[in-house]
Image (cartoon, rainbow, N blue to C red; front, side, top):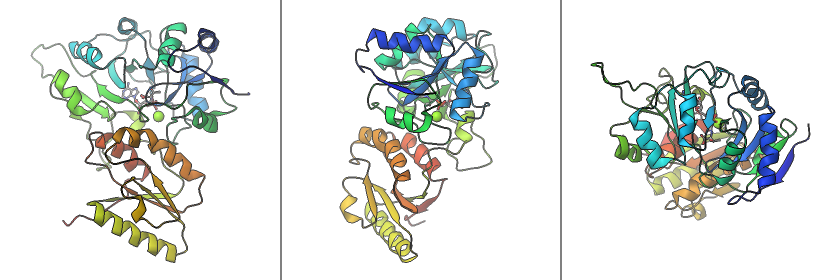
Length: 361
Ligand code: TXA
Ligand code: MG
């Protein structure tokens, strides 16, 4: 199969391009398209064979459920069993946008789409191309990130082509995405009507651009899934996809945590040692610290004060390292940023949770 890359206007998509993509989707085919978070690999969410085609193209384990993308709030009625009031409040605040909510699913949603679960994850993206495509294709597009399983999510159409060329007929190229990391996922499926039983607290299954603080402001207490930190290998994450190795570059990545000066000197010492061992070393750092490093490849995510740049560049930079000839990569950490939990969730996974602390115990 040849893969066509079709440029599309990101703010006001050409109707004929959207129609061409929608025809592929309604016939059960796959189309990659931009969202504000990352590029998605879309299929008609209500056709079981379409979901199966997504798993095949991505090489994704079929127990890993897909997010259904909708363009109007009223579209929820057909795919979920009940809409808790918290969902209305969150939608009001954050939809369209980078928030995915998990509900109990209705019978209209095939088990192939939800990886066999009785719950369904739903998101209303804000990207004009995504919204136009969803509307034109019947209202329900299942879309995981458009990477092959295990690679960083694509933030450019070229990343999608790198991973999926020859496997899908069409990529809508709307240019670079804005946010660069995947949506926040919150589980609302455990909320029940109060009937004397204890109400459970909504749980964040994947951290993202919408932070815990932002969610708490709208619906009160929200907790983090203890499984997504990866700190305790015994605690399994609730989102099936969070257990898989992800985002990892080919070279071994190690994170170095602590005060800036201590981090710089530790990374330089590790680099010197690795060079003495005949290894080629890469460093991932910030504009402020880059001049202090002396490694074969030094790559900058952006200024530490510009977290939008850091999330936007993260996956492209991890991908770029695969084309560079390095054996080891050392990276700074970003725990203290507002989006620190989301950024570090991805970096920790990419590093297989290898972290060196320069802090005194
Ligand atoms: O920003 C995003 O969310 C992007 C764009 C394309 O919308 N999509 C995305 O999809 O990141 P994907 O498939 O790469 O990640 C979906 C995550 C997986 O970790 C999956 O296990 C989890 O959502 N998930 C999906 N349905 C779920 C459910 N019913 N219960 C718990 N977790 C679920
Ligand atoms: Mg993904």
